[in-house]
Amino acid sequence: MTDTVSGSDKSLSFEKTWGSSTSSGYCSGDSDSEFEQYFTARTSFLHKPKKEKDEQVELGKQQDLSVTEIQQKVKEYNAQINSNLFMNLNKDGSYTGFIKVQFKLLRPVSVPPPRKGTATQDGAGKKTGGVKRRTSFYLPKDTSKHLHISSRTCAREVIEALLKKFTVVDNPGKFALFERTKRHDQVFLRKLSDDECPLHLRLCAGPNEKALSLVLKENETGEVNWDAFSMPELKNFVRMLQREEEEHVKQIVQRYALARTRMQEAQAASPTPGGSTPG
Image (cartoon, rainbow, N blue to C red; front, side, top):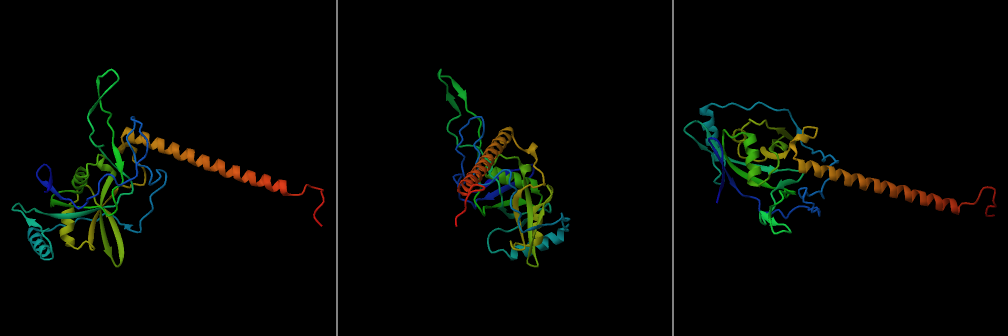
């Protein structure tokens, strides 16, 4: 069965290619109801993610095609397809087809917790509203998703549709869609603007994923956009920083204490000044 996300004048459908559940990931043992559950065991908040070998290139201009050129390219594209993921022309000059998006996320994503009842009873037997919480986890490596979209579907709509499919409640502004190409044995990454149309890029490049692939990554701007985080997330970051600070202080104290002990042992073993030395 195919899930569909409706837009203003177009629809996006999905073919599920990922079978893992939210059990994949690393769960923190905190149960403080004031904060969301946050999976923090994999990466430090202070540590910058390892830079990839892919070289990020400047934004290029999307190639404009005439109706005749589109018809010819669609025909050539479908001739290279070995599956049923064809492109189809519409009477209004647009076309529909499939794109595959690979996930390369370094940070966890947030999803609603499993529903275990929306209300609880307090000591007096009165029903109280459930605490609004979110659970965060790491998507499995090499996760990918096929989307059936229109040539008018922009990159921002693709990101929103992907997050909706995985029930991710994070701000879409935290993510960006990238075009990954390979030329002369060198890999290039280009960040798509919000209004670029991924299916147009797929048509121009052909169906070969090695020539062009689409990747969902964190929207790295060089600085942390704190406004994109919710209050529970910000509180969790503060707690994470406090834990890291405490751990670093503990390690430094232990290191100096060990050094002090060794120096004291060395002083005790050394002959006193002016004393006799072994003959």
